[in-house]
Length: 406
Image (cartoon, rainbow, N blue to C red; front, side):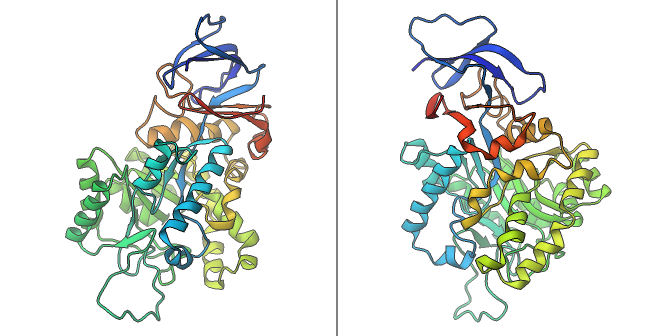
């Protein structure tokens, strides 16, 4: 159906300059025209925005659709069908917060993507890596140190899989790509929830990282990598990784290296704050909370270093389980070191560029997908509006309206 959004105050995802009183013509799920004069159409259905703030749908570039619990062992042991049904609700809730695109960071698969595509899930556009790839004893290996396997098998869970050596890496990455993965995820430093690796631990040999990047590029896609530390980030970008996830303990040198290799950083503050505030009450063990303290104290300063170095900073949340409803909290957590415009740009056009979707997502522009939200208020003046989901009064994805309370 052809639609016209009338009398919009447009933030295009690229410029801080707003366009007031504009109409947006939508045809076949895309933006066909933007005009400061009223658009005339005999067939279009008109929606008066009443001067509301209209912007690109939000993009979360570090999401866990199968993050159905705070415990990875609980996720692993959940029946597959129940996990998928829970993921459906997670995706639909995210769309209702204004996120029209998600980039999954571990475990997301073609089943969820097809569910969205076929209308079985009323959720955001879904980009997924398949199983994230870990070395034995790395961040994606969820076996406790005292776990005694009854066979010689490696770990393979709901979110991650083990690969050791460049040849195994090639095989595992090729398999994720065969299954439709839109990108590849690696773990290159220690992490918070994994039971046997310290944060400072380097993971994967350079040859293994190179193998993953080569295979991803052969499919014209890229690698995103979990990397908390400066050393991990440097190893990533020097071996072709496009997207540095978390980037919590950066140095001027690592920020300069990320910039020099034209890579991106995707900080994830919401999960750290959520665990710091609610972790013990939710049963998070002490060793996990200690790791949160280790990285959380550096996170904002690291974003400031990245920003000063000119690194393109994306937007992600990294939430799991009962903390999922804090997805919109990420905006406010960044305001100490980034401006509202920079924060909104991160969650729109920069994330789209990172995902190789520049000009198609994250912008209000002719030819882009009609993924739009209309807000009662101006988040450039008050970012907290994005946490007030009743203020997001229109949600459109591909020209289809999923919420309209105007």
